[in-house]
Length: 573
Image (tube, rainbow, N blue to C red; front, top):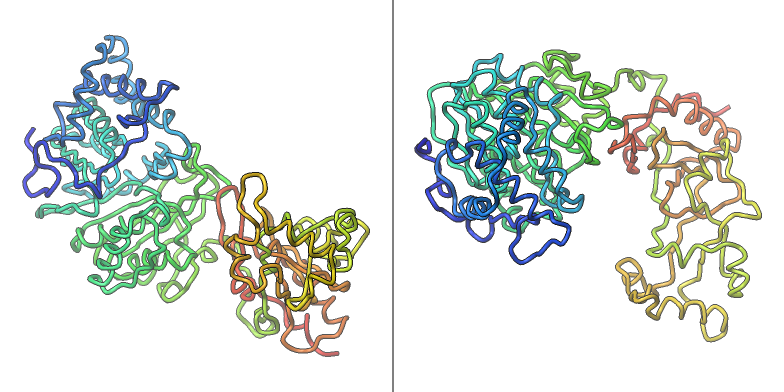
């Protein structure tokens, strides 16, 4: 089948992607022999794809795909049994090709290339929502092995589909999958979705899929510049810290026209982080969000991937009074994407964090009986040592080095606060923190000098501690510049609600906890009342921080300052 007209520049017959956009596939790289046999396994998988009819669907092949096809044709033909088994599985809704490919990826390669294929229990509700709106074309960005496109074709074989992926192995597998489901009008493009030129059609286009999850660290400067430029074109500000999934949202906003629809599943981190503001803004201004479904972070929405998941449904160009939001316990609980509680647009606009809107129980009522912790206190991170193994010592270690006089008791683990029952006390096993004044005369204290010298020489093939990023920016490198001990301490990153404790012994705090400093004088009794109130309400604080895979929740200082406390907790008596 000839390619659809208008796709440029990389879909022309035999085209090779520009060097900046080529996909260096870790499984088939010519200059990277793999003794574990993964490369041979991929080649056999590609041969199966050809035997399923990959070369009969999807239009023109790029040079990268043709190169893989040539490798595959050198392998023995697949058996009739293997071909029939794979075809039957695909027709039943499975993805044997993509499943096998995922097994061959290493965890590191999956992360760097954003390879997190979508479970069918997530794909199907998304396609239900999309197909109910009668699209005239479906675009699957970052198609992987074609799970979304194939699901659409199973429902409507004549639907024009456009499947796009930068990975030539993935696009060859997508061609085979679409051949197995008898796609009648499919175009498969091995290209960069952000470079796509999408031809106009009269009807509605549906954009549906799982944009690749690649963090900004693995994106090129050119890719980040592209995002900033497109954001400017759309009247939006884009952070250079935004991940690749944000770039896919930007590209979709460029390609879509009023009346088009979309349904994307991505990591849910954009709900709350600063660099996710571009997605929040696009959904409210232009893309027209209608619903948001978040899968409980303790579930595993993507097989063997430590990422969370949010599904956004949008109807381009609409401006509604609000959107439906919902949190489900597992992917299997998604069912219909028409469900959810309505949240006013005003509650979303300008809000820096959306996760609290998805909590099933309100955290507090904004009335006169409640105030924010930030109204009465400031929250600061614990000290960053740059080398806890050097600066935090047991009492025995400090005595052995003769530096006990230069140390002070420290809270060195979150468990100390979690198990404290509301009061952290120093004890015989309390760790010590090296706290040397900046003007200390090392020459007059040979034992101290000897210990500091241990941090100034390489050890175990590692550079000196004094040259690390954090330490090298201090003058002198060993002076921590500790803040006064906080009256109250709190955990800030655990798989349970944050815990709070009084700190009557004035223990120092490193960056495993936050220190809470009241901004007005509080009596001992008031401090006790405040900590008691915070701990009594701690279960309601779940979801007010940034939630990651497995239920791990992190509270930045500003997020902790936003927590509610009853006014009576600090009232004067």
